[in-house]
Each structure stands twice: as structure tokens, then as C-alpha cells.
Length: 321
Image (cartoon, one colour):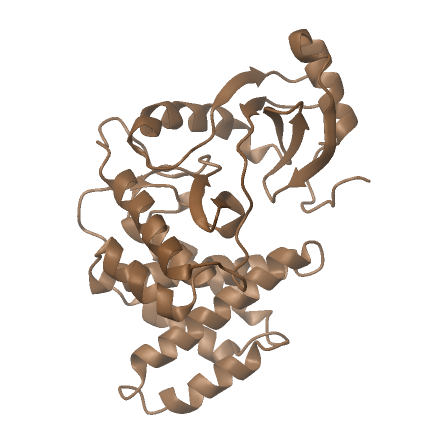
């Protein structure tokens, strides 16, 4: 069965294409089976190649440059990180009707986390904080800004975020979302030195084994910038009590925490309408993240804003199934 089409400009990434590309460009692996199935993401489609390799095909032309970016940064960051990260073993060229560069990586065992069914959220929160802290400690000399503008000023996302809010009246409390987003924009920008950020710490890019963080995937957006960009995992994955454990472990200032909450909100607000009808699991994750952010924002402002108490109840009710 073909993978679902998520983008208007999407190219073929099916298993038969993967088979042809491998056979024509890497005949040493032509004997390896493709499959038995595919793992789909919003940016790349993965096809197992035997037991220990995986073919990764970008869905659209935009991330073709990420193939080289990711390999360059991973070689530099890998020795300093406490968990496994992708290991690129080959880069393919356009061919067989596929228009861009693609790659082959070593397979990493593990499963992506389910926010509703975490074995030990507090332990996972500590693991995530340990990864982020180790990443930020790497020397930034020669680094460049993250892909997709993440790690830069939140203000750069104001227009698409407000456009998304305007079209979500059937799913969320748009007044509460606007209020929370406006508060995030009012937070002072990062003025410290840039640090390494993964810039896409979503559940789909994390692997667990035995409930512990075992790997972080997809460094295509990695670069140096505002550390707030990597705090999104506090709201897109962790429950509120484990969020406190995470915050203590990453030890960031109040403004950075608030910008991180703004990043989580903006990303989820834009994802929800984009994937509402094409990728229900992603849309559900976005709705949960919005719920978490708005409830957290209302709790933070309780007692300071005359409408905070009413708003908190409205937020929770608005995102229940």
C-alpha cells in the first residue's frame, strides 16, 4: 500500500522506487530485501534495507539539502551525545525518476513514545534534559543557523501562527490561543550566545527502549540558535508533573522557558490544520500539545489576569475529543 500523500509537491517515495535506486546505485546491497514495511514521517519515508540499514527518501524537494547538512553536523556532534543518533553510510544521487539526493543509514532499534502511555515520564524527562544539555555544551565554532528558521526569533512565525489560529475555530479556543501566543511574543528575545539545537524534538524523532531515551533522529534542522527551540518536548510529549522535572534538569531562565512554550504552541497550531485530513496521528499530537500549552499558560497567569480562571476551563474543554 502506498504511503499517504502529505504535501502538494510530494514526489514518489514508494518501496519499488527504493528498490530501483538501491539496485542501480548500490549494487552491493541489491540482494537485501526492502521492507517488510515502511516507516513514514512528515519529511522523509524510510524503507528497511535488510536487518541493519534503512533507505531514507525525502518526500519533497525542500529538504534535499538536509542530507548533507545532517551528515556534517552528526559527525561533529555524535561523540558528545549520550544516546544514539543516525549514522549515514551512503548518499544517493537523483535517478529512476527521483529528483534529488537521498541517503542510507544504519537502522536503530527502538520505538517512538506515546505521550498517553509513558512508562516513567520523570525518568524520560531527565533523559531528554541530559541530551539537550550535552548538545548545548558542544563547541559552536563553525556552526550555522538551524533549518526551517527554528532557533531564531519567535516573531518570524507570527503571521503563519495567527493565520493558523484563525482557521481553527472548530477545534480549539482561538481566543485562548491568541492570548497565549501574544504573551509568548512579548517575551524578551534570546541575547546570549547561540547554542546547538536539534530544533525538531517531536515524539516521532525520539526512540525509547525500556522506557528510556535511546536515540534521537532527524538532525536535518539542527544548527545553532536560541536554546528555547529544544524545549518544545516539554509540551509535545511530557505530562505536567514530569514537565517540572524536565524544567529543573535543563535549568533555563524564565524567559527561555516561555519562548519554548511559544515554540511548542506555534508548531502545533500550524501542524494541526496542515495534517488534519491527511495524517490523523500528527493532528492528534498537535491538538494534545495545544491543550498542554494553553492549560499551562492559563495556570501560569492565574491570579494575574482577570479572565485567567475562566480561560483555563475553556481551554481544557475546547480540546477534548
